[in-house]
Length: 272
Image (cartoon, rainbow, N blue to C red; front, side, top):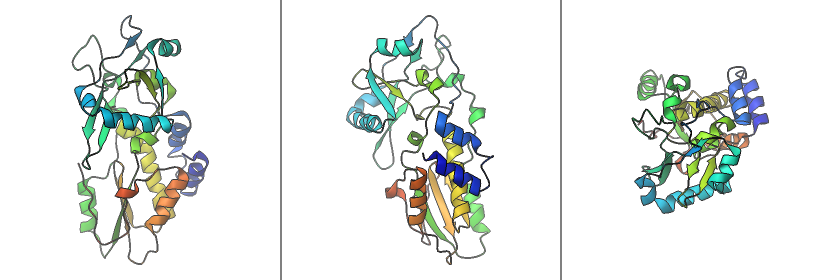
């Protein structure tokens, strides 16, 4: 992220104080609520990956290669190398879910092991109330359209690999290690799918970005559902999605161009 531009944008939108934590997070990483801990006398806890990861091995390897190239992950390392850096570390079983478009999304099962009080999971330490989300749900969107007093145009904006754009605080890294498909260890420095804090951690910068866009462009409303955004403007507005995408890119927000659309009188936005 271009932190300097973010700071200027937040200041111009008069929301700098409200989102000061976002700037801090971009610079130092976002805390995931995981306390310093150990598991008995173990030096590490590195369970095997889930079967779903093995079945999707090729795509997961490709995904991890991209993360390594983008320097969002680092490695490979062996156990002794990592133990010289961290007095205790753990990996969480890697799994995979299939997205609606057929792509495979790697997840880390931070709730593993399940129901074993002698070996508490990473997620069991995290208070979900500290990471509340502020998504705009179906009821809010439908209520807006019911009260709309004239025609409007709609457009969609989607963050590219949304969670992976958000760094985690270094104090969290020992508990977010990954055991790769090659059997080696990797350091993951970004929000992972599978953590209790993920949605809330992403939500803060996403909300700040949404308010910046609303302040800088001639819009009626912006709705956000996780990383999907619905932009609404009057037909007389000259705002163009190309300008919104460019501004977002300048700020450092990567855009999924395949899921973005220009303003029109009809769009499809799915709520899970």
